[in-house]
Length: 311
Image (cartoon, rainbow, N blue to C red; front, side, top):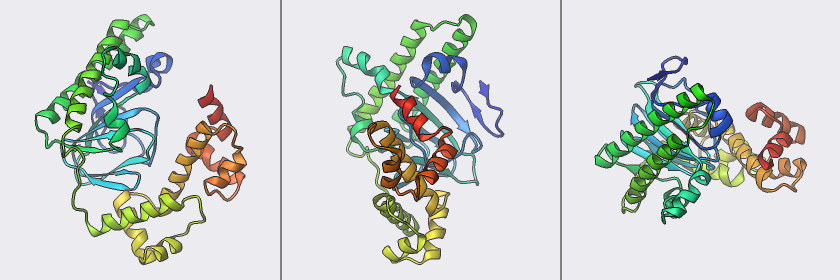
Protein backbone atom coordinates (compact mmCIF):
# COMPACT_ATOMS: atom_id res chain seq x y z
CA UNK A 1 0.00 0.00 0.00
CA UNK A 2 1.39 3.37 -1.00
CA UNK A 3 0.13 6.53 0.66
CA UNK A 4 0.36 10.03 -0.77
CA UNK A 5 1.25 12.99 1.38
CA UNK A 6 -1.75 14.98 0.12
CA UNK A 7 -4.47 15.13 2.74
CA UNK A 8 -7.15 12.49 2.43
CA UNK A 9 -5.67 10.71 -0.57
CA UNK A 10 -4.60 7.07 -0.63
CA UNK A 11 -3.63 4.89 -3.56
CA UNK A 12 -2.60 1.27 -4.01
CA UNK A 13 -0.25 0.26 -6.80
CA UNK A 14 0.58 3.83 -7.74
CA UNK A 15 3.22 5.06 -10.18
CA UNK A 16 3.56 8.76 -10.96
CA UNK A 17 6.74 10.81 -10.92
CA UNK A 18 9.15 8.10 -9.80
CA UNK A 19 12.63 8.06 -11.31
CA UNK A 20 11.69 4.94 -13.28
CA UNK A 21 8.74 6.66 -14.96
CA UNK A 22 10.80 9.74 -15.76
CA UNK A 23 13.69 7.82 -17.29
CA UNK A 24 12.07 4.86 -18.99
CA UNK A 25 8.27 4.72 -18.77
CA UNK A 26 7.29 8.25 -19.79
CA UNK A 27 4.10 8.16 -21.90
CA UNK A 28 3.97 4.38 -21.49
CA UNK A 29 1.58 3.37 -18.70
CA UNK A 30 0.71 4.55 -15.22
CA UNK A 31 -2.22 3.97 -12.91
CA UNK A 32 -3.89 4.63 -9.59
CA UNK A 33 -6.05 2.16 -7.69
CA UNK A 34 -8.86 3.38 -5.43
CA UNK A 35 -7.75 6.98 -4.96
CA UNK A 36 -9.81 8.64 -2.24
CA UNK A 37 -10.54 12.33 -1.72
CA UNK A 38 -10.36 15.46 -3.85
CA UNK A 39 -6.95 16.90 -2.94
CA UNK A 40 -4.95 14.64 -5.24
CA UNK A 41 -4.85 17.10 -8.12
CA UNK A 42 -6.79 20.03 -9.50
CA UNK A 43 -10.05 18.95 -11.07
CA UNK A 44 -9.72 21.21 -14.10
CA UNK A 45 -10.64 20.47 -17.68
CA UNK A 46 -7.63 18.75 -19.22
CA UNK A 47 -6.48 16.54 -22.07
CA UNK A 48 -3.56 14.16 -22.59
CA UNK A 49 -2.12 11.93 -25.29
CA UNK A 50 -2.63 8.63 -23.49
CA UNK A 51 -5.83 6.60 -23.58
CA UNK A 52 -7.55 6.39 -20.21
CA UNK A 53 -9.69 3.82 -18.40
CA UNK A 54 -11.58 5.49 -15.54
CA UNK A 55 -13.43 3.36 -12.95
CA UNK A 56 -15.83 4.99 -10.47
CA UNK A 57 -16.12 3.23 -7.11
CA UNK A 58 -18.12 5.47 -4.81
CA UNK A 59 -19.05 9.00 -3.82
CA UNK A 60 -20.96 11.77 -5.56
CA UNK A 61 -19.56 12.82 -8.93
CA UNK A 62 -20.58 14.29 -12.26
CA UNK A 63 -18.13 13.63 -15.09
CA UNK A 64 -17.83 16.10 -17.95
CA UNK A 65 -16.53 15.07 -21.36
CA UNK A 66 -16.39 18.04 -23.71
CA UNK A 67 -20.05 19.16 -23.65
CA UNK A 68 -21.59 15.99 -22.18
CA UNK A 69 -22.33 15.39 -18.51
CA UNK A 70 -22.63 12.00 -16.79
CA UNK A 71 -24.05 11.46 -13.31
CA UNK A 72 -21.85 8.58 -12.16
CA UNK A 73 -22.96 5.42 -10.40
CA UNK A 74 -20.68 2.88 -8.65
CA UNK A 75 -19.21 0.50 -11.21
CA UNK A 76 -19.28 3.01 -14.08
CA UNK A 77 -16.38 2.81 -16.53
CA UNK A 78 -15.42 5.66 -18.85
CA UNK A 79 -13.19 5.06 -21.88
CA UNK A 80 -11.36 8.23 -22.92
CA UNK A 81 -9.30 8.96 -26.02
CA UNK A 82 -7.38 11.47 -23.91
CA UNK A 83 -7.41 14.40 -26.32
CA UNK A 84 -11.06 15.31 -25.71
CA UNK A 85 -11.43 17.77 -22.83
CA UNK A 86 -12.66 16.03 -19.69
CA UNK A 87 -12.88 16.51 -15.93
CA UNK A 88 -14.46 15.05 -12.83
CA UNK A 89 -16.65 17.28 -10.67
CA UNK A 90 -16.95 15.43 -7.33
CA UNK A 91 -19.32 16.49 -4.57
CA UNK A 92 -18.27 17.08 -1.00
CA UNK A 93 -20.91 15.03 0.84
CA UNK A 94 -19.25 11.64 0.44
CA UNK A 95 -15.79 10.20 -0.19
CA UNK A 96 -14.93 10.28 -3.88
CA UNK A 97 -13.17 7.03 -4.86
CA UNK A 98 -11.93 6.11 -8.34
CA UNK A 99 -9.25 4.17 -10.20
CA UNK A 100 -7.54 5.11 -13.45
CA UNK A 101 -5.18 3.61 -16.00
CA UNK A 102 -3.40 5.80 -18.57
CA UNK A 103 -1.54 4.02 -21.37
CA UNK A 104 0.06 4.79 -24.70
CA UNK A 105 -1.51 2.98 -27.68
CA UNK A 106 1.87 3.18 -29.45
CA UNK A 107 3.41 0.99 -26.76
CA UNK A 108 0.84 -1.76 -27.50
CA UNK A 109 0.76 -1.52 -31.28
CA UNK A 110 3.28 -4.23 -32.20
CA UNK A 111 1.95 -6.65 -29.59
CA UNK A 112 -1.64 -6.29 -30.82
CA UNK A 113 -0.60 -6.83 -34.43
CA UNK A 114 1.44 -9.87 -33.44
CA UNK A 115 -1.53 -11.36 -31.58
CA UNK A 116 -3.82 -10.71 -34.53
CA UNK A 117 -6.06 -8.28 -32.63
CA UNK A 118 -5.19 -4.86 -34.10
CA UNK A 119 -8.76 -3.63 -33.51
CA UNK A 120 -8.63 -4.11 -29.73
CA UNK A 121 -8.43 -0.35 -29.16
CA UNK A 122 -11.50 0.44 -31.28
CA UNK A 123 -13.63 1.29 -28.20
CA UNK A 124 -11.27 4.21 -27.49
CA UNK A 125 -11.16 5.31 -31.13
CA UNK A 126 -14.76 4.86 -32.26
CA UNK A 127 -17.12 5.04 -29.27
CA UNK A 128 -16.59 8.76 -28.70
CA UNK A 129 -15.50 8.64 -25.05
CA UNK A 130 -18.28 6.35 -23.90
CA UNK A 131 -19.55 5.28 -20.50
CA UNK A 132 -20.07 1.59 -19.68
CA UNK A 133 -22.54 1.06 -16.82
CA UNK A 134 -21.81 -2.23 -15.04
CA UNK A 135 -23.63 -1.84 -11.72
CA UNK A 136 -20.62 -3.66 -10.23
CA UNK A 137 -21.66 -6.86 -11.99
CA UNK A 138 -19.23 -9.60 -12.93
CA UNK A 139 -17.64 -7.44 -15.61
CA UNK A 140 -17.31 -4.49 -13.25
CA UNK A 141 -15.58 -6.68 -10.69
CA UNK A 142 -13.26 -7.99 -13.41
CA UNK A 143 -12.17 -4.46 -14.37
CA UNK A 144 -11.76 -3.49 -10.71
CA UNK A 145 -9.54 -6.52 -10.09
CA UNK A 146 -7.53 -5.98 -13.28
CA UNK A 147 -6.69 -2.38 -12.41
CA UNK A 148 -5.65 -3.55 -8.94
CA UNK A 149 -3.29 -6.17 -10.41
CA UNK A 150 -1.79 -3.70 -12.86
CA UNK A 151 -1.25 -1.27 -9.99
CA UNK A 152 0.63 -3.94 -8.02
CA UNK A 153 2.76 -4.80 -11.05
CA UNK A 154 3.63 -1.14 -11.63
CA UNK A 155 4.78 -0.91 -8.03
CA UNK A 156 6.96 -4.02 -8.44
CA UNK A 157 8.60 -2.81 -11.63
CA UNK A 158 9.35 0.56 -10.03
CA UNK A 159 10.85 -1.10 -6.94
CA UNK A 160 12.99 -3.31 -9.19
CA UNK A 161 14.32 -0.26 -10.99
CA UNK A 162 15.07 1.49 -7.71
CA UNK A 163 17.23 -1.50 -6.67
CA UNK A 164 19.02 -2.20 -9.93
CA UNK A 165 18.75 0.92 -12.07
CA UNK A 166 17.68 -1.31 -14.98
CA UNK A 167 14.41 -2.02 -16.73
CA UNK A 168 13.05 -5.51 -16.06
CA UNK A 169 11.84 -6.75 -19.46
CA UNK A 170 9.97 -9.68 -17.89
CA UNK A 171 7.94 -7.41 -15.60
CA UNK A 172 7.23 -5.05 -18.50
CA UNK A 173 5.88 -7.96 -20.56
CA UNK A 174 3.78 -9.07 -17.59
CA UNK A 175 2.17 -5.62 -17.30
CA UNK A 176 1.55 -5.55 -21.03
CA UNK A 177 -0.23 -8.92 -20.89
CA UNK A 178 -2.33 -7.82 -17.91
CA UNK A 179 -3.39 -4.69 -19.78
CA UNK A 180 -4.22 -6.65 -22.96
CA UNK A 181 -6.44 -9.01 -20.92
CA UNK A 182 -8.23 -5.98 -19.45
CA UNK A 183 -8.66 -4.45 -22.91
CA UNK A 184 -10.07 -7.71 -24.29
CA UNK A 185 -12.74 -7.67 -21.58
CA UNK A 186 -13.54 -4.03 -22.35
CA UNK A 187 -13.71 -4.76 -26.07
CA UNK A 188 -16.27 -7.54 -25.51
CA UNK A 189 -18.33 -5.36 -23.18
CA UNK A 190 -18.31 -2.43 -25.60
CA UNK A 191 -19.91 -4.54 -28.32
CA UNK A 192 -23.11 -4.83 -26.34
CA UNK A 193 -26.11 -2.76 -27.34
CA UNK A 194 -26.17 -0.87 -24.05
CA UNK A 195 -22.47 0.00 -24.02
CA UNK A 196 -23.21 3.70 -24.36
CA UNK A 197 -25.48 4.82 -21.54
CA UNK A 198 -28.05 7.52 -22.06
CA UNK A 199 -29.80 8.69 -18.93
CA UNK A 200 -32.51 11.22 -18.19
CA UNK A 201 -30.92 14.54 -17.38
CA UNK A 202 -32.23 17.36 -15.23
CA UNK A 203 -33.17 20.73 -16.72
CA UNK A 204 -30.01 22.25 -15.22
CA UNK A 205 -27.82 19.59 -16.85
CA UNK A 206 -29.53 20.02 -20.22
CA UNK A 207 -29.04 23.79 -20.09
CA UNK A 208 -25.41 23.33 -19.03
CA UNK A 209 -24.78 20.98 -21.96
CA UNK A 210 -26.40 23.53 -24.28
CA UNK A 211 -24.07 26.24 -22.96
CA UNK A 212 -21.02 23.98 -23.35
CA UNK A 213 -22.06 23.00 -26.89
CA UNK A 214 -22.50 26.64 -27.87
CA UNK A 215 -19.07 27.52 -26.47
CA UNK A 216 -17.47 24.62 -28.38
CA UNK A 217 -18.82 26.09 -31.61
CA UNK A 218 -17.93 29.73 -30.86
CA UNK A 219 -14.87 29.76 -28.56
CA UNK A 220 -12.71 31.35 -31.29
CA UNK A 221 -15.01 34.37 -31.35
CA UNK A 222 -15.45 37.22 -28.89
CA UNK A 223 -17.55 35.69 -26.11
CA UNK A 224 -19.34 37.21 -23.16
CA UNK A 225 -21.85 35.87 -20.67
CA UNK A 226 -24.38 38.37 -22.02
CA UNK A 227 -24.03 36.98 -25.53
CA UNK A 228 -24.37 33.36 -24.39
CA UNK A 229 -27.49 34.15 -22.34
CA UNK A 230 -29.05 35.98 -25.25
CA UNK A 231 -28.23 33.29 -27.81
CA UNK A 232 -29.70 30.53 -25.64
CA UNK A 233 -32.64 32.54 -24.28
CA UNK A 234 -31.50 32.19 -20.67
CA UNK A 235 -31.04 34.79 -17.98
CA UNK A 236 -27.44 35.82 -17.41
CA UNK A 237 -27.60 34.97 -13.70
CA UNK A 238 -29.23 31.57 -14.30
CA UNK A 239 -26.71 30.58 -17.00
CA UNK A 240 -23.78 31.55 -14.80
CA UNK A 241 -25.18 29.89 -11.69
CA UNK A 242 -26.14 26.51 -13.16
CA UNK A 243 -22.93 26.18 -15.16
CA UNK A 244 -20.86 26.70 -12.04
CA UNK A 245 -23.08 24.35 -10.01
CA UNK A 246 -22.98 21.49 -12.52
CA UNK A 247 -19.40 21.77 -13.80
CA UNK A 248 -17.56 23.25 -10.83
CA UNK A 249 -16.08 26.21 -12.71
CA UNK A 250 -17.23 29.38 -14.45
CA UNK A 251 -18.39 29.85 -18.03
CA UNK A 252 -15.28 31.86 -18.93
CA UNK A 253 -12.99 29.24 -17.39
CA UNK A 254 -14.58 26.72 -19.74
CA UNK A 255 -14.12 29.08 -22.69
CA UNK A 256 -10.42 29.43 -21.90
CA UNK A 257 -10.03 25.65 -21.44
CA UNK A 258 -11.49 25.09 -24.94
CA UNK A 259 -9.13 27.68 -26.38
CA UNK A 260 -6.12 26.16 -24.62
CA UNK A 261 -6.93 22.68 -25.88
CA UNK A 262 -7.17 23.93 -29.47
CA UNK A 263 -3.90 25.83 -29.07
CA UNK A 264 -2.14 22.60 -28.03
CA UNK A 265 -3.60 20.82 -31.04
CA UNK A 266 -2.45 23.51 -33.48
CA UNK A 267 1.02 23.73 -31.95
CA UNK A 268 1.45 19.98 -32.43
CA UNK A 269 -0.33 19.44 -35.74
CA UNK A 270 0.30 22.68 -37.66
CA UNK A 271 4.05 23.40 -37.40
CA UNK A 272 3.91 26.08 -40.09
CA UNK A 273 1.33 28.24 -38.31
CA UNK A 274 2.85 31.22 -36.53
CA UNK A 275 2.01 32.00 -32.91
CA UNK A 276 0.15 35.08 -34.14
CA UNK A 277 -2.02 32.94 -36.44
CA UNK A 278 -2.70 30.45 -33.64
CA UNK A 279 -3.65 33.15 -31.14
CA UNK A 280 -6.10 34.69 -33.63
CA UNK A 281 -7.55 31.30 -34.63
CA UNK A 282 -8.31 30.42 -31.01
CA UNK A 283 -9.92 33.68 -29.88
CA UNK A 284 -7.14 35.36 -27.89
CA UNK A 285 -7.11 39.16 -27.83
CA UNK A 286 -3.37 39.42 -28.48
CA UNK A 287 -0.24 37.32 -28.86
CA UNK A 288 1.02 38.68 -25.55
CA UNK A 289 -2.13 37.53 -23.71
CA UNK A 290 -2.00 34.20 -25.52
CA UNK A 291 1.64 33.57 -24.56
CA UNK A 292 1.16 34.70 -20.96
CA UNK A 293 -1.93 32.53 -20.46
CA UNK A 294 -0.30 29.48 -22.05
CA UNK A 295 2.84 29.77 -19.91
CA UNK A 296 0.71 30.17 -16.76
CA UNK A 297 -1.39 27.06 -17.47
CA UNK A 298 1.12 24.74 -19.14
CA UNK A 299 4.37 25.80 -17.50
CA UNK A 300 6.32 26.44 -20.72
CA UNK A 301 6.04 28.94 -23.55
CA UNK A 302 4.08 27.99 -26.70
CA UNK A 303 7.35 27.85 -28.67
CA UNK A 304 8.97 25.52 -26.16
CA UNK A 305 5.86 23.31 -26.06
CA UNK A 306 5.93 22.97 -29.84
CA UNK A 307 9.66 22.25 -29.83
CA UNK A 308 9.26 19.57 -27.15
CA UNK A 309 6.44 17.81 -29.01
CA UNK A 310 8.18 17.79 -32.36
CA UNK A 311 11.42 16.63 -30.81
